[in-house]
Length: 111
Length: 120
Image (cartoon, rainbow over all chains, first blue to last red; front, side, top):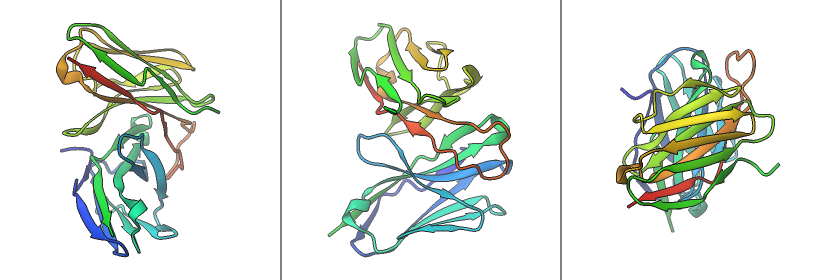
């Protein structure tokens, strides 16, 4: 089983739609959690951290469920510019800060 | 700061040749990661270093792959001999690892622009 797993999609949604991505991780030890965004043929960049109490940044909301070992990202009122691949990321501090990426979920927002 | 710098940006080589990819992390960062990205397998962690010391190289696919970090500002990933199935985008990333990580730590990893390797 992979340490971090995501539904690869693709998700094809119209502008203005709400879309949710999910991610599961296999190791329950000390971690930090993030969502990264990767545009076509570019490097991944940090979108937002994921905090235990959940956190919001504009149209983006991240949630963490430690009991179920589950992370989610919600995008509201999606824009054309949101089209990208979204990567779930976990840092395993009990393994020296090992940084593992999910396979990524591709999002395509259409007019 | 210029960010993480990788070279070359593109490399086309013939099967059997040696390939060396280079990475300069962000100054002050103490952790460095090498990843390989393909359509089929996504972003795979090959090896990572803390304070120039390799911590986990279990992701290195074969003995043909090796990585070094001789100092805090430079790392190399070498493939010898290269094979067509090594064709991929190779990313280097760096971050500042806290000395005593507790709970969630907002430690952003910064990536270089990648090296697109094609082995023919």
